[in-house]
Length: 346
Image (cartoon, rainbow, N blue to C red; front, side):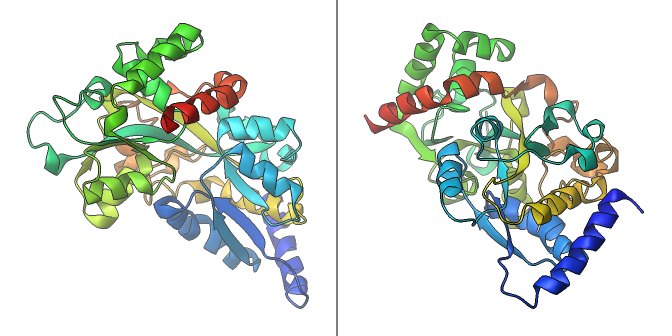
């Protein structure tokens, strides 16, 4: 019997005993919307069915500040999905605990999915999205088009905060994808990015939750927006929308991670959930619901080939992708976020 099955069987026995006592459910935190709907079907409900362990869900919009605040209070969150810079800072600050890699196996995952305090769960991308029904002729195909309010009038959407916004601003200003972080690492490059953002400030709506971009497009509040690739595809498949991702415009892709809060009083159960959700036979089931790439090396070959073109790491998409530079953002996020907030408030 595999280590994973042994641990899950043990957890099922513990769950039966705990059910007779007052016990807090294992709380798993993700990013809501269509993505968390998919996780519920692929991970949360099957985990409960396999183990008998009850799961409570919560959602948030990310941010190391939220994790710091939760870590200072009584245990309430156990497993939390985080972005790369939150993972690194949370691990360094003791907000997150090291995972048991002896059961996960480092060689089972993409190198970028392996970290002391987190295991990658998806490869995702922030992309440009637009409603094709609004652009029957000459649709936008570059970030320069996104910033061209004369050729393409109307409101735009960008995620609130510097991540993504600064990269896309430089792409729009002619910086090649492969040189974006080199330019952004200079004060002149940062000034260049904010100057480009100035050109659309009067035509800009800042969103916070991943569910918002397709909602903004559907309501006609924006004509185009940055968005998480999976949310655009989910809106097309679940709501009959005609949204388009111009992959050739360029995009930023990254890995999200499962982590465990240091103040969790259910760390063993949390680790068992992470082990369950990281199994390739579970990971392969997510992309048909929402097209984010798997991180287990054996899962990629198991994914339904019909959904592969919608995944950031598909061969036809990857050449225009920019991998999220974790070192750049860990060093500069707080200062750039402060500057972005001041810019947005002006």
